Length: 238
View 1: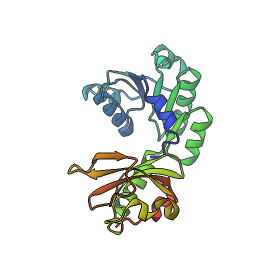
View 2: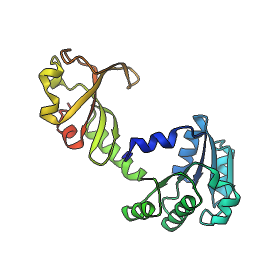
View 3: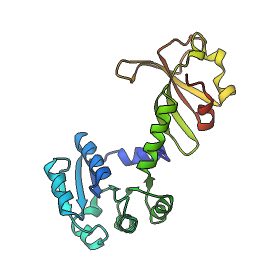
View 4: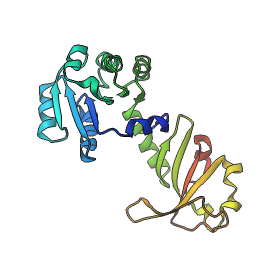
C-alpha cells in the first residue's frame, strides 16, 4: 500500500479512540470489523437499511446509522463532524464519494481517508480535501503479483511511489557472506536497517537493529531493507 507519508499515519493513529466509516460495503465492513476488534469505537454509516442492520447484527460497530452522506445537514445532526478521523468507503459511487469527502472536510473533520476506484476519482478526492486516497483493489493486485514473483519478500511497506521498506529472506546468493562484503548500498542503492530470524508463523523474531556488518548471513535470516523500488527489484529473490 502506498502510504504516501508515515507522518500522516502517525497523526491519524495518535490518540484516536473513535472512527466513523461511511459506506458499509465489503471494504467498509472490513475496516469497521478490524477497528472494532482492536478495541476502537466505530460508527458505521450507510444509505442502505440492509447494510446498516447487517453491521449491527454482526457486531462490527458500536453505532450504525442509515443516512445520505451527501446531505451535509444530516451528517451534522448525526454528530459526524465531531469525529477527528473518518474513512470514506464509497469507492464505487464517484459522485457520492466526492461529495461526502467534501462535506467531511468542510464540516471540520481533521483526517479523512477516502477509497478511490479510478485515477480520476482519486484526483477528485484529493482536490476536495481528502488527506489520503487509497486504491484497495489496485494495491491488492500489486501485492498478489509481488507475492507470486517475489516469494522471499515477507512484508513490504511503500513509503511513497518510489521507495519502500521490505522484509527479505536472505537469498541463497547472500548466504555465508557479510553485509560488508555484499556492499548493498553501492551495488543496489539500499540500506539494511536490521537483521532478524524467520519464525515458524512466517513473521520475524530476534530483531537486530544496526546489525554488525561483519556477521555472516545464514539461511533463514531476514534482512529489513529500505531503498528505492528500483534498487529493491534488482536484489536477488531466489
